[in-house]
Length: 262
Image (tube, rainbow, N blue to C red; front, side, top):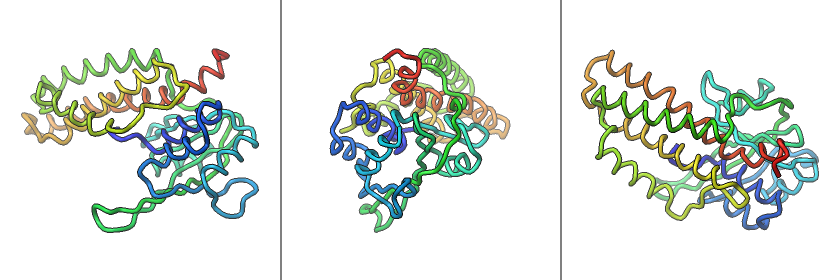
């Protein structure tokens, strides 16, 4: 949750490109980020992997008018619509992009090489057929914002009651430090997204950071197995809420278009 998922970057900047708000070069530069290279494999009409610029142009000619993010987890196929083969690969990668306007989905496969501190990252996006159906369990932006605010309050109360490190001023300072590192040199979402989507995504990332701080900051006062179990149970629905909100933010442009808002 601290770093922007690659599928999120592809969805956001791909949507901006499809809307004519950014150039292909700017979109590809933002999608690749700090990775070395991204290629797309399995694109109809291509027998070998191709670059992102060609792939995004080809998807447009195939009828794709928008891109949605999926962030599935075991027992929670968030943003997926099937079939089972695509869902399984997306679950294994913990992320995927689902096309709007044509029945395709893209799942990233990440390859890393090189010594620590100088890792070379290449990403291959596998194009697979998807089922035309509403994505699973994606809330509206309004629903996501309300759920996040409530989840943040509940998580803070529960963690404080359990005397878990990650619920007080020290944790707030750690959250701010995490956010500063995560946001340095990064633009939230992409041109064309509504301000509310940016606000929801930032809050989702803050909630996700709180979860990481609480998880990584030691056992606090939770010394028994039952107390540790209570912490996990407290954080599980909060993490799910944050993921749902993150997907809602990235998908908001497509959802508005589908409802005829734009």
